[in-house]
Image (cartoon, rainbow, N blue to C red):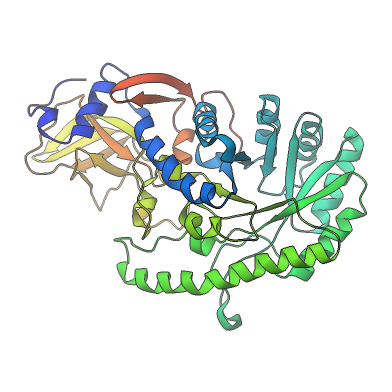
Length: 410
């Protein structure tokens, strides 16, 4: 890959270590630092273990079977299963040996419903619903397959102060315990469904940064909104469990939480399990959460291919933009060597990404610059494999979903 005019060891130790790990490997390349992943695992599992809850791993935030298995093994007794993002993924993972799966996103497509119904021959492959149409369609598919499908009902947990506005994500139309009880009772009359439990995702808490450099004036109001919203979330989930139990529908599974809310959601009495995914690999959005310190574990390396001006290089590729509201925080972050910056007028390009170098750093053509994706799972859609490293040694080169030919959402 070529040597830097300034020895890497004189700069950041992590940069030097990653350069040595990928020496001779084709670029672009992606790596998972297992030492960093271990630290993140311990940090995020600690509150879950302390509360006696189970961890449900969000596969959309990993999308690499070897890493998913690694997390499960390290979690040990605290591991409770996976949360999937597509019916075809659920069916595939069940065929590969997963035994406790929860599809977090409803589907009405007949081929999906058939896969879910069939997967329940070998595993508990639960499906999320939030309306009668979802339930009826699943019941028909399960009847055709001769199976029963466990169902989990999702409740909306968005924050609506004084009934004004909507702070959160647009997911379930169910907002009250009465709504959920009514749907659960309807499912109880369908012979090929089994009511398993409920889920409520507090996106306005778990998925909202509150310590970022972008529009930093919003940080304080966001922290205040999170504190106010938390009470409503806790009350709603507790009320759900009480109302269901009173009707003889005690939920076996009550799911909630996320990386950004793992500390307090783990301690919430109503929850039986907490979902975590993104924080394990430490996408750079998690740099912007107060009270949450994680290590970057997932990186990708691009080679320097041009030097258009002093202190400026251009890398090959790099336009891996995260989903969401399209702000500057969704761009990849050049992180090693420390102090690199994207150009405001160009950002990250499909085939070329210009980078401003920090003072004192020079790069030769072919040298790697390491980047972090804003999120954790989406990078796997751009790479066929991840190099899993320990120290500066590649322990395993593991295929991603893409490398295994598994593209579930295009």
